[in-house]
Image 1 (cartoon, one colour):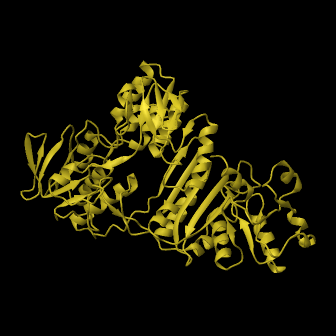
Image 2: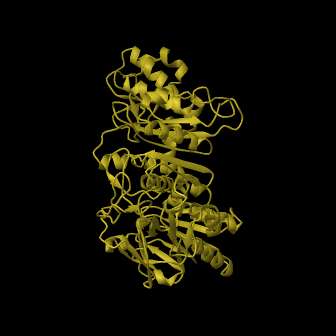
Image 3: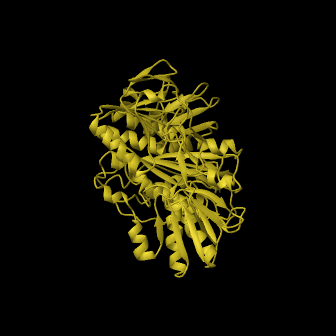
Length: 535
């Protein structure tokens, strides 16, 4: 059997290595149009920022390794210019052809570069390949760059901005929407905004570019940004022109359509990775998710299907991801509020402010955790931000989601505990308990910033109240509440807040048992409320 793989990235390489482990006799050829393959693409921003200093570390697996260990031939600089599905032939560089029995499309995605007036006036780059990073690094050094602008606030844009700032370059980031990091909701993104600004990165949100002159970018707002260099990180589009010209089915966004075994409309042609439409694990909608993890798993799945090795279907993509934002980490899984609203999926939410480990053990870091769920307790998505412990909390929730668990499983999860690593009640348990309190009708959470027609009850210590408080808030410290119930009206909604959200819940339960009915507890407390006032 002769197998041809188009594309030497995560999906293509994963398939080829797995296929060889299952079939020693198959002839496997990887055709890569660039001069590089198996590059650690996610590390490119850190290579630019000289956090990763050795270029050799950016090469995950060399063509020599593939040949020696796997007996797989990788042909670099081999651009496939035509696929003939009927005769099972691919054409390389418009010159010669190769027949195949099975064809794997792992063509990935390409950076999106919109038409921007005057873009040619300032040196600009995109970042996808190691060669792109080489050019950027050389330009910064040779031109002694002191100011740079990143256009786009996605993963790559945020990481590049952080790393340019790390080099001591005055860095600006322009984002057309109201927030960076679209996979998370704006309430979580605001914490990342604050972190980047505190580190000296200039954020321009809800900002469109009007024109670019020889030394500055003029925004639609009239504001201008002086810059010597532009990095375009606006997003990616599926690289499927080759597939489309061969009659391979794509959706309205140009992503390749496959069945559950990653087969295209031609049985002997499979596709995986960033160029493929997948089913969203939560909504079931067709989506395109450019992440290395799903690409690797899809490649492995295809190999098992071709080899007949207990083939199994691809059961959707959760979109689990993580990104470093200066000293913070942001992670997420499942759907965010915008996605749920777009797909008309009703949901509830909960936010808590926890700690990375036991509060009495030195070095604990604040951690904000948000979970979206259905009234029945199905977990629809989760997001977290903090300095430490973010990844493991989202990984736990992502796993519970994948296994069909519910919010009660968050409450009941038995997780490892020792003071340096967690609390006896992990933030996973705490948010599960908070959700169950809501589902049982014990408390009503509040998330907004508008308190019109509400009595705001601040139950923090008086010294905190005196330092800063919500306008017109009444201060009754939690320990005094039972003796001062007469100061509170029973005919108006009461919104209670404390520092982090737990004490306000306790007070809400006290009031409820003394006949107060329209009571709300501010999720995340004063700490979270303050974080939402930055933008």
